[in-house]
Image (spheres, rainbow, N blue to C red):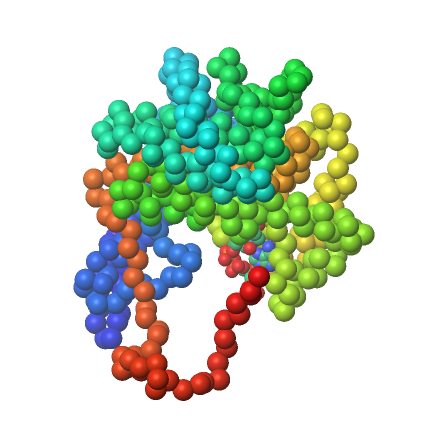
Length: 437
Ligand code: CMC
């Protein structure tokens, strides 16, 4: 199978077929418009491959996720987050010497410029930490301009990985009005983050190995997920040759939405609502099924996974273990399990292949770790950072890279003469509502 045929207006056209390492088949449409005059229409890009990539493989039907060929289950069990960053960004598992050097670099670049630290003072106390993270990451480009030279790019990648965790922890400190805690070079990536988040100057803070392990697992499981909404955003922005920090900042904004990374916060809000409403999860399953009700079961469904999300399977087990180790009895975990049980047996969810996704259980673990709800999506962003960086790097190193510029099918008004304001008539139509404060 090396070509595909298209019959359009009685004419036959042939297009090359591309087959990936795992036998994924794609029709190469790059010459479609040039040869036929037509474009492909695919809102939401459910059938569109935007690139060829060597980073992450997902088989949504079989519930498979692999980073650079390594199964997520094995990576989650054995790898540190720093190893995963290295694997995704540089393409291979690091040797001990490579990892030591990488760790030292990421550790030693974790301070943020004092002028950048002052930026935090300008945000209102209730600013969402995702907004702060996105603004701060974009602001890094004011401090570290660099060039497109390889050494500059590599250094900026290290800076971004190192400083993002400091910015994330500071955005939390800002939101609770506590003094900022500076990074420490004697701690690992995850330990340092926990220390900056939870330590206060008035008393010693002991880093719990349970929290350290749980955080490592969560970051590793979120590290990459091929061409999702935020990663595609990073690639889209990167394709205009905007700098690394701007591209990643745009990715953070894309992740924030409740249908994407913001779902982890929404899951907990949903569980809280069900608990406050007497724990009647069946009622909420029915609401999710009702087409006239906008309510959806947050943490359920996925564009790609039509079997199970392997990350959710790992996190479900981890949630039990972490809560037990921390001695936390969380009634919301019980509600989550019951909700999952009811939904998994309901034909509405079965027919649509709607299973719990990664966000369904991650929030329960973050909560048990003492991470506040509005920081959940920031945690997702920290984990996803190496994925975004590796996808941006792959894009910018591609000699055939072109600016992303989709087309459209225009369905608006045909050409018509402009009407001067004095000749316009009142028409019955919906008016925008402006609330005056
Ligand atoms: N609750 C109830 N019904 C749902 C849900 C849900 N969570 N998700 C999908 N459906 C229904 C939807 O109404 C539609 O039904 P019908 O065919 O009768 O119209 C059908 O399932 C297909 O849904 P869709 O919206 O066309 O699917 P999609 O691929 O465009 O959207 C999704 C995927 C993840 C946005 C969606 O499942 C959803 O909104 N889930 C809740 C939010 C969520 O948990 N997001 C996190 C995704 S995983 C983390 C990440 O990578 O971002």
